[in-house]
Image (cartoon, rainbow, N blue to C red):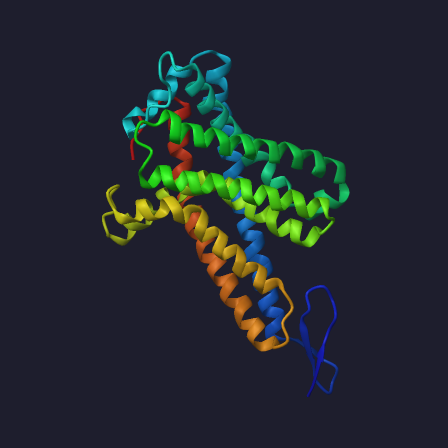
Length: 300
């Protein structure tokens, strides 16, 4: 039996026997597993992000247009009171933050589509500018809401949001710098990191619902006082960043093909499991947001 390494884009190893029958090697299986798990993640997050975009503009967008921002306080039942009477700057910052999150949810995922980048490079560039400006405003408005508007910013939520904001600004800087330097490969890595941290608040909410649903299914009786919620304030962007780094490593070439295959299988399995958990959270989060839009009672 003869082993030959093919030099196609997937860097797969094909095994050809004496009868010239090509068999799929473990490396090929590992590469396919990583590819399909990535596609599964992309489709899932696209659906979730675009529904989130719909919710933001259906609830926050129209409330601003109709000068009915008092309805934001429907969240008071959950311990939040976004609208403050007479606080023009604070209400403006919150509106900008919420609507900015919607723009990021819709436009960010488009930047990740290779076919769109290659076919419509001008759109990719313009959309990228809009995205960068929006995430910058998102970070600054987040700082304002935590450190100026919030009377008690020194808590896990405030600190987590602040770190998230600094990461957004840092990753945006490296994304732009590498684009200017024409280092497209590195630019795309930083753009993916920026995408992850820019959508942390969506991940926070989806993860919360996933924890509550899976916990109830497993009979662990989850509650809002659980340690998970303090940790998830930071985990909503640190965990995706860690998984993304594993993905980067899996897509790089390595001298020892067998270990590379094992790594790809492990990474694709982890990505698949986390995507399933994300989908579970989306399934719970979607009807909840619909109840908010439809002015129904907010409850879990």
